[in-house]
Image (tube, each protein chain N blue to C red):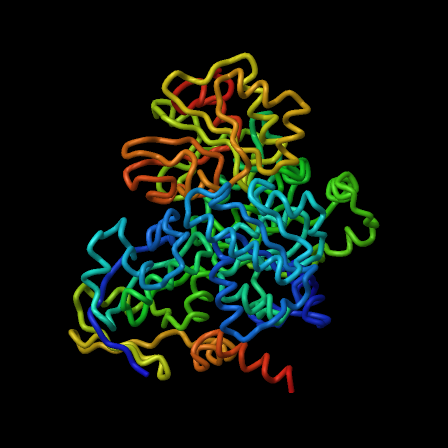
Length: 167
Length: 422
């Protein structure tokens, strides 16, 4: 699996209220949530994102609330991955659980501009800036997290374990 | 090498003698909690996982508190969905609209004990660290997995110890201490870490103040906040009717030779009330620097500061005074129990006579969900936990976070004010 697209760049501490504000939280349909993604920062963000595009951000991406609506809205507006210097822990877990690709890489943040073309190869932990030709290494996942990513998220992972229990 | 209280609790729930930071463990939580925001998605995911029954109907708690009392038809549907789930799963602990805010309700019902692990579908689940429990927030899919399996993976966090020394003034509460700490380390200063609060000023705090401190650990990126249980914890647990022994309550405390990532010490004897200015909870300033800031609304309540001590502190200032003509002051008791106690103590009279609005217990105002949503250009002093851009309404509105004393004084003054000014 690999993902490639244009880079959308954000700074530090992009909180979940910015990703999807509280008043939308009665919505549970991912498609509908996707339409409002990042709306406070850029009202046209969701309509401009193309499938496979990548958010590159600074420290503490996804800080704040535990709302899974946030990674759901990023995923369903078409984003292929989020690359950040660091993630808030609940957001990181949520993204892994729903199968939104999230990678930690400080260098990629400092050496990427908005609009650059980027390629992410999660199995190899490789992030390439195709515009500049530079290549970066993402921080590896702990084995258990890598297992959930490989399974395609927590749903298939738990399905597997529940079946094993039945046997 | 000894262990921190957090490491001890995780080890006990993972069936291990010892755990170390960085290690990933599977633990069996004592409670799994969800609400009307994380719950509806969790129920869908639970079904998709092929789960049929929750792991233990006594250990899964549902509280409808965010869009309740139902804000609109969508919220009504959401509430119904959670009600149906609670009934079909025969959950022992289901608390419907208006019963109270989850993080106020669970401790006051005695559902959380020192040394417990609580996994909640809400980032402010960290609140229960005030009793000496390990409690952390997760999203809907993790809640679904935990409801199905009765198990969850956790990385053992490093612990940062925060020591608060000195005896602060009458106007200082748990909120001021935690805003000071977040201001010092920043909104990602405790990322993935357990925040352990101690020292004379924390020992002197009542349980409500300790809940306030632990509640905001997440605003520094913390995985959990915790205060080691002591005589106050024991007395409080007995007061709410739990039959606990001293040995059980004191069983989990940090060893003298445990390893902290760092120890940060604050002398708070001269501390001024703190206010976090827009748009990060780490923007803490002494209130005296902010006296020119005119305000339009005040909110006193939430899982951070909606307990009886908070209402008493607000009433002490509002008694016999009037809310400023151009300010709306919302008082939101954290639970029906808090509401009843405030009623019995005459605090509700004080609020109504001052011209404040007393509402049903709800999370509504804190996250811009409903009740007190801000218009463009409006400023609110709020005892809640987040002042992110657009948090309480319009993206051009502003939220100033404070404790209940500053909020009450500001409601009277029509601008940010020190309680001594009114």
